[in-house]
Amino acid sequence: MIHFKEISKRLLFIIMLTISPVVLFAQDTTEETEEERLERIVQVFFVGNNDYEFYKALENLRNYYKSVHDQYKYFKTMSREVCYDLNHNYYSKALEKTEQIKDELIKQKAEDCYYMVDELLGIFYGSRDENELSRKYLMKAANAIKPGTNDNDLLNIYSTLANISILSEPEDGPNGYYWADKAIALAKTPRQRCSTTSLKGMVAIGHNDKKTFDDCYREVVKIREENPQEELSMYWKYMHLGRFLFDGDFDQAVKACDSITLDIPRLCFLSHIYKLKGDKDAEIETLYKLMAAKDKRNNEISTLTINDINQDIQMEQQRITGERIKLYTHIAITLIVALIILGLTYFLLNRRRNGFY
Figure 1 (cartoon, rainbow, N blue to C red):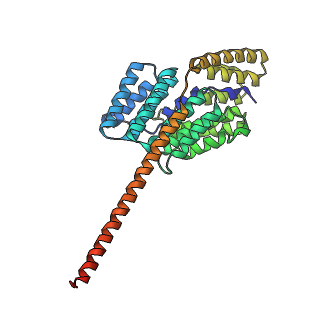
Figure 2 (tube, helix red, strand yellow):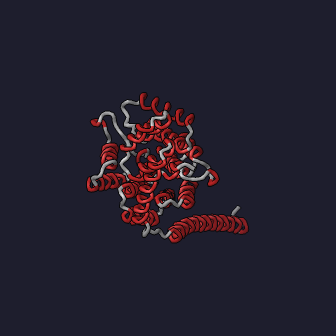
Figure 3 (cartoon, helix red, strand yellow):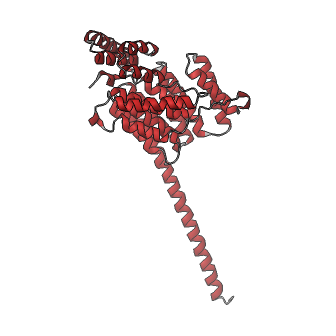
């Protein structure tokens, strides 16, 4: 397998927000709703490094959704904070906030949103190269989403599965193309279509599949040209790099890696480029650097654990309790109705016997 299969899981964290359905942009800010204004501010600071301003903006947005009693978006803002922390290497904070989300979901009995914790767990395990567990939780989250609801969350999950599949052997299950196509099928906005198509193009880079990459590249260029007013830079640097790579311009492909600020994905791409170029010395040197970068990352998150069994049991107990309450309520109503009917029947029969009819 090519070295590109070691591409960084850090890309997973970005997906959660970059194609989120709740990020809204108005052409004219004077016509923005309060929700759009708050969402726009959150997105601006999400892609930056100003923690204070991001957390403050997100708190304002979360308070807004709380005030309008939008439970789904309220919990989505909590998930977005976890994604921000993961993307900035704040692993302990991200883990703590995931536990807080779980506790809050259970407290509010928000059963329709339980899958958000499994989605975050899938991302956690993906960040630790534990692909089997990552897929397990992501698929659990996907299966928990009711058909026809929260399609945008499904899109994010399928995109994440496609990203994980770039690293996997074919026999491990559906490959990246399968998941990317499922994400593309759910994409509606130019931003979503551009992001998911670009992701499929990245899968093609990993498979040395020039034909599929060319198809994806042309589609992405078309989407960008048809929507000049949109900010469609997601994954563009990777597609730009892939273009140089498949055109055989390895030197420009190497230079294009300079735009990748995160160490692991940059080194992954560099090792892949040097392999295709046939520069063994540069490839080996880059692989050593990649191993060191991954060791550093793993050391930062090796002490993090999530009590998955406890989490599963708590939520399962909540579901069972809810089902029991519904069952008992149904039984009670049935008994009451039956007693009323029996009482009414007895009353009518008694009146007939006493000659009232």
